[in-house]
Length: 209
Image (cartoon, rainbow, N blue to C red; front, side, top):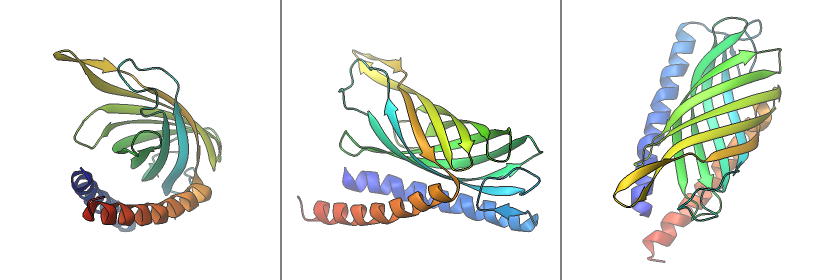
């Protein structure tokens, strides 16, 4: 199981790296004004999306364990382009860890649309799909009070097997996330912890424990 999950993560990591190389080269080719912080068009053409937060499942799913996908730790990285003074479009990858059910890992690819209300206030809508073996759809909406803090709501369309045919289920999550420079800092710290954790996990799997 460990080898299987790690191989899936490895494939997705290569996809992530390739995608961002293409984005960066395209931005450089267009001589775009780039910002490490989300900013509207009068301050930046292209900006980095770096969110880190926590979500809690608020509804009960029949057939799931009570703790299954109950507490999620989420990391999101991507790039967005301001197409005018009101709207931005882009894409991002989201990595979610189920903190209460065997530390399951989920990786999503998302499109993202942003409506600017002011320099720090915005509303994001992001439909996407899980990139693992069990494909299912997701969609999230984030309201940014400031450029560094947002509340988020996310719904997923998953499947469960009750009998011979699958039934659709819709887990709903509410949460909070840090964006901009705080989000980038949390993502960096989370990456370091994740590397340490994955190394220990591989060692433990290799030793048969």
